[in-house]
Image (cartoon, rainbow, N blue to C red; front, side, top):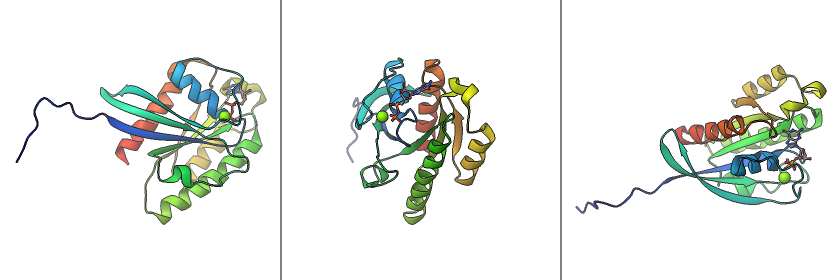
Length: 179
Ligand code: GDP
Ligand code: MG
C-alpha cells in the first residue's frame, strides 16, 4: 500500500449549465457571477465555458459555467446533458414567452434525468427582478412550475447586488455536490 503524504487533494470541480430562451439574461448572470459587473450588451450568439476558482462552504471548488445560446429551444442538448453537474434554467419575469420557453428546457431535462436515472439538480431562476413593475410571471407561477419539476426556485436581478447572484450559483454548487 502506498500512501502519498504532502500531496494536496485535488480541488473539487463543478460544471454548471445555464439554459433558457434568448434574452432571459443568461449571459448577464454569468458575467455578473464571474466579474461582479453587469454588462448590459453582450453578444447574444456567444456560447462559451468559463472557469473560476471559488470557495463554497470553506471548500475550494473549480466552477465551470457554460453560458449557452439556442435558437430554437432545447436542441442539440448532447453538448451539455452529461457534462452538467447542475442546470440553471433562466427566464425573465417580465416576459411570459421566456417562461413558456423554459418549460421546454425543464421537460427535456426531466426526460434526460428519467431516462438515465440521473439526478442532476435543476434550479429555476426568474431573472430581471428589477423589472417588477412590468412583471408578466407571478412568483407563485414560478414556484408552481419549480415544484412540478422538483427544482429549487429563485428570483434575482443581474443588475442588482452581486451577492444574490453569487448565492444562486453557490446554491447550484451545493446541490450538485449532494446529487
Ligand atoms: P441571454 O440571451 O439569455 O444571454 O440574455 P442576455 O444576458 O444577453 O440579456 C438580454 C438582455 O436583457 C440584455 O439587453 C441585458 O442587458 C438585459 N438583462 C439581462 N439581465 C437583466 C436584468 O436582470 N435586468 C434587466 N433590467 N435587464 C437585464
Ligand atoms: Mg447570452
